[in-house]
Length: 459
Image (tube, rainbow, N blue to C red):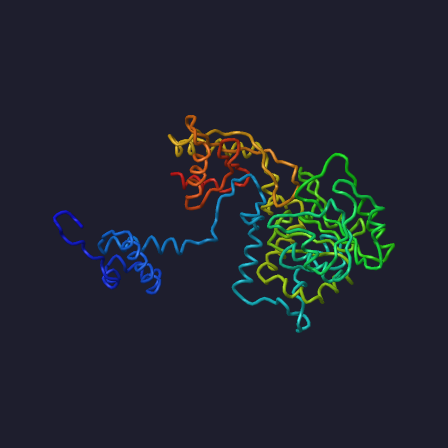
């Protein structure tokens, strides 16, 4: 009770708050129902805390509630983590050609499953199949939601209630607990693992083949590397062994680069074309990793096997929507001009960015960041290494430069300071996502292409 024994003024009524002139913009922007809900929530919070407030203060509280509610969860961020294809940040950024194609598909009708020439129902895979066959050398192709779905579909269509032989050293787990043994189980295929973690021989595969065998399979270990005393049969050997026994040879390629990355000064990653040339009957890979497109699971290879896959009921459950098919087609077209691909495909552009150019960017940014962090952090520009990410080339790093933040003076609670500093950068209108390592916050500049927008947030 206030001094002098006076009564606490009651909180204003909902209708009084809604009638206030300051509430009019909220009603106009968010509508009556949502605004009423926010006003009631603000009043309830004040009441539970035992606070008093006038109409204006309640309007301010309700506005904050509405702003938080309507803040987009899907919004741009600056990826300064040093991981180019960051799964948690959406993987491959799309080129404008893909954005425009997806926008056109979103805003109108397209011939998704309609053959314009024959005026009959068509197959949605037709939108991208010719390009996929041209770029991989395959007889046929099909696409689904993602590569996990592609592997599931491939196994269910070709090996349900039968055995698939895989090397023990390739029973991978990738992000989100996607494990090959569990995917096989869900596909109703029985895993027959052979060899050891570090060494598997052709004779191990041959000994495992029996009347229940449906396929031999190789899984590209794209997110780790086993080095030292190791052995794995060549793909061509596995393909011949499979074919000698009338079996298909399946390859889950994972990251799935469509081009030889060595041409652009990057480490080599197996391509679908190379894998098919070695005798693989089907190859699956992702669309949103090294390919640089939208999320997709792509299967290329023998026409008869693709036809069996398309008839499987799971194909409909896993099929691609028109928006991503439009984006994928636009990205695939860019590969027809490899000389300009590094300029036009954002993923390849970021991966091939020269360290000297990144350093020059850091030198331009350093004064502004130091000024913004004055008294809060000591900011330096230091050499570092980026990684490709999404399980691609796990041991290969790319030289880069980063803005590095450390405490101005030594402190005991360094970990807490780093958490607070990282959180402060994430609170910008366009959140800045860095990485904490070696007692510092690192903002790797490899993926920063809009320095003007970053600087505007620091002003």
